[in-house]
Structure formats: structure tokens, C-alpha cells
Image (tube, rainbow, N blue to C red):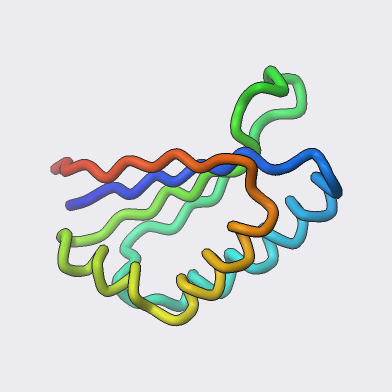
Length: 97
């Protein structure tokens, strides 16, 4: 199995509205059949402001399925949106059993 964790630090401008919109738009990824586990988390309000605001935690059977996901038009559309509102991004893909 491959776990894909992608975190986003959002720009200050319209941060709350953009976070809400990102949470709506990320739901369109739920229908991508290669995703075996779908979890989206938001930084706790009491956590440091330096933390990332939103993280996607998705599991895939293998790296091939992750690559199919990466090329899916729904993922590309979400990526186009998030690029406009993010300050930075961090990502890791790792194998687990």
C-alpha cells in the first residue's frame, strides 16, 4: 500500500473562505476509484498558526494507482484551484503494510 499525504499552507488573503471552498472541492476526489482510504483533516484552531491548514491523507494499492490518481481530471482541477490559494505545499508518498 502507498500512503499519500499532501499538506497545504494557505495564503492569508481570504483564508477562512478559501479553506471552506477547498473542503467542498476536495470532495470531488472522493469518487476516484483508485483511492482506497480518503481522509481530509484541518489544523486544530488551538494549534500554532505556523502549521499547515489542510491535509489530504489517501491510501492506494500501489504506485501505479497513485499515478492514475495524479492524472485524473478531478485531481488536476483540484490542483488548479489549490495552487491559487496556497502559500506552500508539502507531500510524502510512502509504502506501508
